[in-house]
Length: 405
Image 1 (spheres, rainbow, N blue to C red):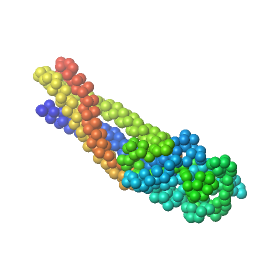
Image 2 (cartoon, rainbow, N blue to C red; image 1 turned 120 degrees about the horizontal axis):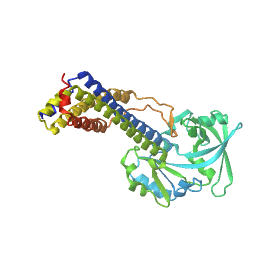
Image 3 (cartoon, rainbow, N blue to C red; image 1 turned 180 degrees about the vertical axis):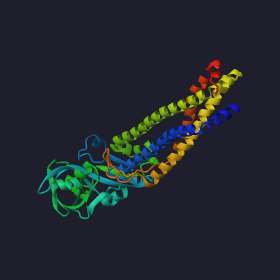
Image 4 (tube, one colour; image 1 turned 60 degrees about the vertical axis):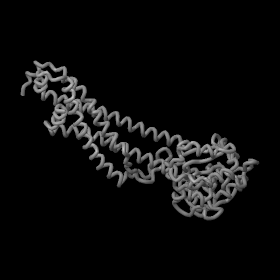
């Protein structure tokens, strides 16, 4: 233990150098913690934004509709599925939608769009995209239509103006038209949502498509995207009856899942860079300390000190440096991370992967940031210290004794 105490005490021999080294390593650790917490906050923000919109926590479609979204592929046995959803306590709420491609025309212009027929009552309970309404009311009347901000500008219409919606019947393929009045304008913050989507009441679209009470999509609300049912395959397989396909949000949006994986990979890259910098700083500091005390090491070796004890002493010094660095790093991370957790960083209006950030990104605290990362820092600095430690065992005693202070 005396060699361990000597190693720990040695970092205080040059307080300024030890503190600056610990500060540099600590800043690297703080950068890791802050990056991890910020990326976690960004991921949660993206997932919550996506799943609170049109995506939901999960969806059910006809299996052929997934590959080819044609209006003829309505959900089969929808009464059975509705009964299952109503009886399952995991399902907080659900809503149904009819969908079709069509054309919207005004006296000035026309555009090809995707038409959503929705039930406003259940949609409000299941998703939150209705709150993106910028002006007007959301489908107050049966002949109302809600369109995006960019689509409104392209059509050259205002609230209260009339537009003609054209689509085709499912069975006959004949064109069917109806006149709607612009009752509201919505802003998703993305180009697709604001320029190519329109919403009408589900009964109106069902009539235009000639599908009676059938529909194309069921959207689920499971209480949150991180709730356990999202991860249970059995929950989804039980809903796959009569040729329908039930999928969770991560499967519905592979691009979002890829972005999550990329963020984890980014943290690994930053961690690798920080590890290299820590290794260089630790090695440089220990070698400077060794060459300053070269005479002392020569004396210790001349007295017959075992190589194992020399390695223990230098390794203890590097471990103590790592411990000090961890404390400094956690303090720095707590200051900046705490500020980000309270204030957040505003990315409002920034679009990433068709997802527009509407709320600030907050730092998310996780236990591994304050336990695993500091322990890894101490272990890593101790491991890096083995090279300078082994170097002391190979010193030429006669040469070292000449370096007397």
